Length: 308
Image (tube, rainbow, N blue to C red; front, side, top):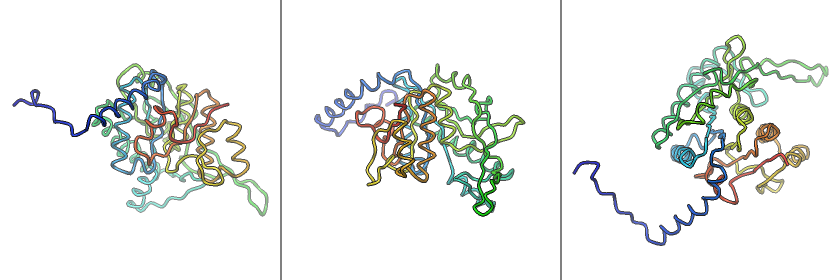
């Protein structure tokens, strides 16, 4: 029998299971309509990217978003993979304030891993799920114009502030939005490695959270979704805080509720919503279909931060 005439496999689902599935789709419809035509920037990284099963589900979900009329933009990290490659090549690296000190030798490896291996793996997974993904780095079309990150540290003994040299670590100065505008009116899904280009053609390693926030702000995205390895922002008793205004988020940072590695993530969210992104959400990427739960259900799947 020709492949085109092959009979579909019979489902083992019961009538009740099909009815439940139809009910879920019906309940999701208003949320799909609410987000249709909007841009959603997704920062993809952490455990969600390292787990093969979750990676496949992520690709499926990104394709679904595009199919229902949403314009997803994926910005990915790759810190663990970079660390593994540097170790394999016996290149020493260190961190200052959570940022990898990146010399000329290291930035070559960073670009190779981020813009090469990881970027193409993600694009391939989305394509295998039925999408049309195109892998980019921030250097393509001068998408992310960057400047060198400046950090200072005060010496506790002399009280003198010293300038720290992080090497080729950058931060977005300008996002060339017309590169991404091309994707908005097409079936293509951009997958972006957070590598920027300097005024002299230098290559800069950019924190993926920072890059995603800058792209969301420049594109006027409706949502910035940041996949993490935690449930979201937690209160002092370890309970999820489902919603925060910018004012409340700052108060939680001042009283120590938001601390450690969560601070830069929240700050990225605040910068995005203050640049007219409707809301930014810190989501547990370890939860299957976390993106769909956040966008298409009433309760969401993390901590939503908005301006007011």
